[in-house]
Image 1: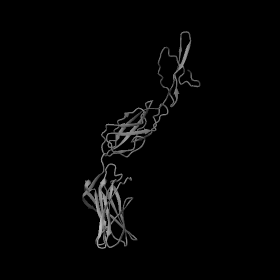
Image 2: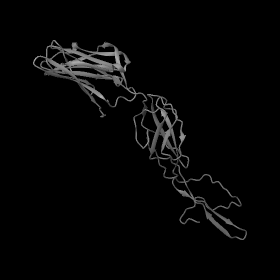
Image 3: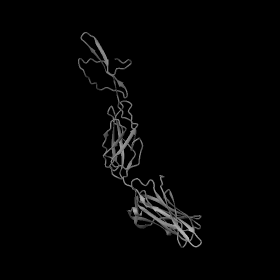
Image 4: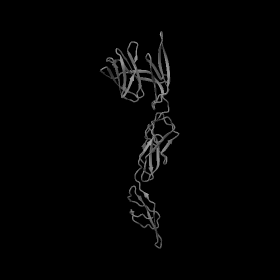
Length: 346
């Protein structure tokens, strides 16, 4: 079979009775199909000419796609399983010779330079099994494609995924130490503002305590960077107020902490507010709740729980405690009512 309108790269050459030949110093174009034609001539001059089915020159590597750290082309942030890791991918292409094989590796972010690739043929989903993933470590899948010409694509990494195989735990602070920070004070109308620069350390617990006297408090708002937190003050027997708030820093960085107190009159709170750092935080599920009566008919409940790997997503089976008061002609009786609630909101 001859190909009309084809141009000869190499003109016809006689090779005697040789059945193979190698051409050198030939410049071939990318993405172009080439054919060999061979003519056999017998002793009486009769001949037959045949052509090969052709080959395409491919000098480019495959284009890359997208890699996910779970099945079904979705990304996850955490997983609880330590024995398996699943990845999926799509979008790798090679328009000349086609993708012939995929290779995948599992990368531990603690040692990101170690890549041990496994051939998975043309699968686009793969699960590593019989693993011993380290709790708290972050992993990525790395995938590359190889075309029929042997070219490898660039390596594409999935989003990171952290292994969390342990449930949240309760904790308590056995010992605080008071820390002194630079305070910036301002009074605007009936609002008194005190700002602190806190050198927060990741997963360290801090407590803010204060006492306010000689005024009537309307509200106390704590601001940590861009997070605003209303604080419920407690009315003391002498008419003054105290308040307390604890939090765990989520990062090691300098944080701007400020208190805004709205009252009947301007108050100076810099000498009445302290910030303390927990220097002995211990796991203790039995002391994970703290209940403080802040008014005759109001109790504030604080949950001390954390999860170092993935954080706390939701709280289930909360038990609310309400104090109801009934009054007769001669006595006043308080009843404690416990209300069970299952909170399925994120």
